[in-house]
Length: 260
Image (cartoon, rainbow, N blue to C red):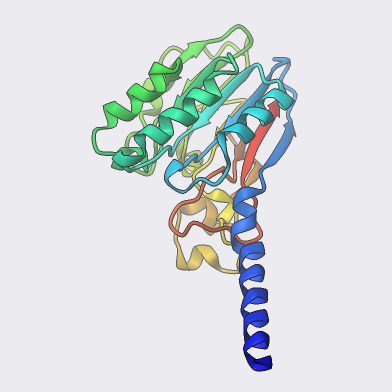
């Protein structure tokens, strides 16, 4: 009996350790705050990589975060789901985000292009008042917003996205896109770019991107946070959901408040 109790205790301790190391970071939402003054005077909440098929952050927790951060805009930077069966879940999450009454803008990610019937996914977003930008720009009162479609799946059309950007410098140019690997080939200037896709590595172990190649930026050790390139300043979100294995190691789920 004593041996059995010892084995059960060891099993419980191992299970608890595994939960704390790999599952708890997917439930412990972090609000990253980034200040990059451009004179726009707005607060933008970025929610990236929802992956509702493997999301452990509740809609209620998201709503609480939106209330606390009081953003002027919410940007969704791709990867909502690739499973048709999860469309009702996505509908529920987008609806709860939209309840804040904050203007919503979005781009698509690589997982979205694997969705069976992409128009249905886009329909969910648009039904809740989300403006989906697919290689196009629009003028907002404080800045020009450029939405570039996903790079890794070959859907980016940079010149189309910039077609109506005057380049006068009167307003900051803010770009949203999913895959930051577009940055090395993006020759058009921007003041700020928001992206996701790389999940902050998701599993923070050495040489992770040697075994899971994700493009030129992570190969250079660039996979999260604020970075600089000749065209401008860009940010890579660690995302809120998971891809592949539904776990994180030393990388918390994130939404990001950008003050520009």
